[in-house]
Image 1 (cartoon, rainbow, N blue to C red):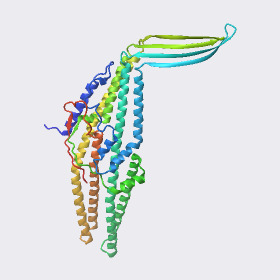
Image 2 (image 1 turned 135 degrees about the vertical axis):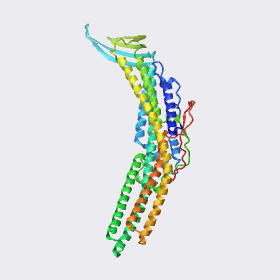
Image 3 (image 1 turned 45 degrees about the vertical axis):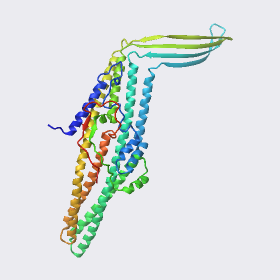
Image 4 (image 1 turned 180 degrees about the vertical axis):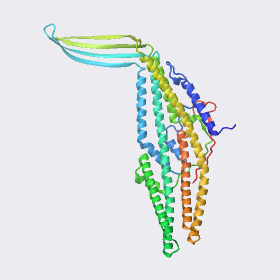
Length: 492
């Protein structure tokens, strides 16, 4: 029995992704970070466009509209969402530095100056004492608690960076979809404007026919009502375009007047994609999706947390020392001296009322939660790619049907209008034909938008593009899932 290509895509991708998961995070140990195991499926390979805005622009340059990549770049430079994500990256990296500092010795300096008065025995004595000291301490990470904490912090820093990258991909797709919505809205305005103009001419002619007795007053009322309806529809559509323009202004940070001037030359024109085929989407690309990769790092961090919690069961050994220079003066007599100490210390947990055990159980619960979240994210990634491919294929086949329908209804309306003008047809028949033609024209614009939007959805589903650099690690077997879609250029 032959399987559907989308089923093959799902199974191959999930086998590769979850297989890599089991290799990388099969069992957290307290002695080594889980990243010590080899990790296939591209979790450590470069992302499809390396977080490079220029490569993002190159992908959008596939479309024959130079304004689209410019808008994506403008949003990438100024959007507050990205600024928030970048701030979270800085926080996570700082936490990783803090965790790494626990593995190195610490050295603290101190100084104090005191003026003292001693009443006993008489006579009272005034004195001054100066202390200058250094304290050093180093904890021997014998059971890996600090190493595991560092590994967890590093993985969370990587996850935060990937989430920033995911925010950039999502923002680029949102800008593209908003731009498509605006262009489709403009195209509908052109359709409705043409309809309103035609409806106005029909209403004028109908009123003249009513005046001379060739049409009934009822038909005159119908023509007036149809004209008002067309004007109302046109006004509402123009308002929708104004709303879409403001949304694009907020996304890109470009002022409305400047953006409107840049939009003017191609009003109502949907961008077209250059012809290229999507023959296969490697499973590694799904793993390279920023959200999936971030979920993988979060899972690895949770595994390291278990090791850190387990290490709390065992003794901690630290080595400490201090040296203090003491200088004093009292009753005209000065004295100096040096105090020092050096030696190891041992701390062993004895009775903690289940605190350590509770910490381990909590860490294991977080690991289970992160594992389920990763599996859910991986399945969602496969689903989104499948849906994008299916919508792309469906939209491609629908465009031809929508074009034929629009052309046929337009011819039918033209014929009905000609018959009505010479008195061989009724106004009601012509208005029905006009409505069919108008609906077909609007449906064509909608399908054309859906087809371009399917490319945008595929871009986002594949993590921002699928033509990135080859991975450094060898790709495991069955890592390529064939997609039964090889669409040509998007055409209007």
